[in-house]
Length: 231
Image (cartoon, rainbow, N blue to C red; front, top):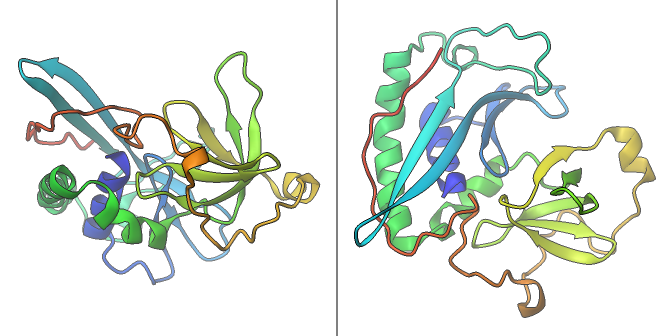
């Protein structure tokens, strides 16, 4: 679900991604701005999806944090971007007016069709595809390193490693790009990074209802809360 929301937000806030500075998506839940000459870009915002049980099902609460005005955070590891870099007239109110309808439409469509109709939009803005990345595994488990080669129809990251293509769920790891030196030291996988490998029966996740946000949502019920946009 977080991937679908990311696509909806990126298309609403940056409908012309082919220009010099464009909005991109970093799996599984970040919006970034990427300019010419930037290797990875800077973080524009983030998405948080949580669920809570209610009688007869679950309620999904979606939170979006978005930098609208200039933010100066020198020690931010990811770098910082803001919406006014691509929309000089942007304000919190105008951003909300653009984002809210897109979010409502995305929730309704996801409810009926899942992630599949958002897959092409995500692929067009996927910032990790073709890059060497390292996963920070949970305590007690070794990190994984490989080439990110797109996402599945269920929104899982395909990570090509020396052990084969692994489907990665956001509930298990976080993904961080590896620098150029690490890229040279990494072993070359057998499949071209430009191709997105199919998910065979052997590497599909066991829980088909698990979303990219790491949440299992058996009953879809949404609360339409006005998102809070912070400066």
